[in-house]
Amino acid sequence: MRTYSKAVSAAVAAAALAAVTMASPASAASASVASATAVTIRVERASSEEVAEWRSQFTCPTNQVLTGRTHVGDENGLTTYHCSWIFINDEQVRVNILDWTPGMKESNSTYVAPANWALVGRSHSGDENGLTRYRPATLFWQGRQVLLTSATWTDQYKESSHTTHAPYNQVMTGRLHTGDENGKTRYQYATVTFAG
Image 1 (cartoon, rainbow, N blue to C red):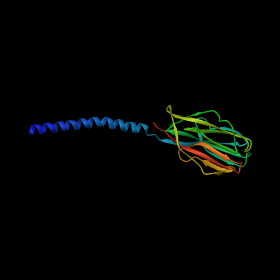
Image 2 (image 1 turned 90 degrees about the vertical axis):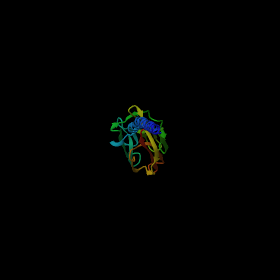
Image 3 (image 1 turned 135 degrees about the vertical axis):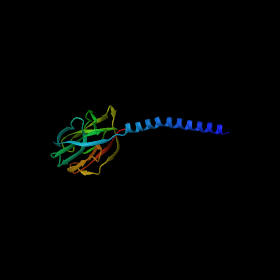
């Protein structure tokens, strides 16, 4: 009887040891995957440039995206574009600039970049009846696409007197404008994310 009890106890102990041994590599692998996908994202202001609104074609410098805009006055006023770098785990994200969009009448225009694309440029000629175009870009880190999620629109700004900056770790993905320089402008911003 005792021999049987000891044999069962030894078998249970051996099974428990095997289960622990089997679980350890799985737990280690799970922890390794978790740490491999955890990233630190940082959007950092890099540059600003002022241009004449009525005849401008602006694109952010290499590997930068739009994160803000300031405009004062009518079409003869000045527009300042604010651009930023994106870093993931302290490594710069690569920005692949795409072609300009077709022109749209500024006084009734809405542009939203396709999913996971950021804005890197804007072109405008003339007054509110002139044409506005946008320049989107795709974002890559270590050969994999960076995602832009949770897009939201800002409140309305008076076009002739406003400044907008992207919230924390967000980039510009769209713009809407109605009317002349006294009309309303809104911006869409989205959060930079990465799914490993």
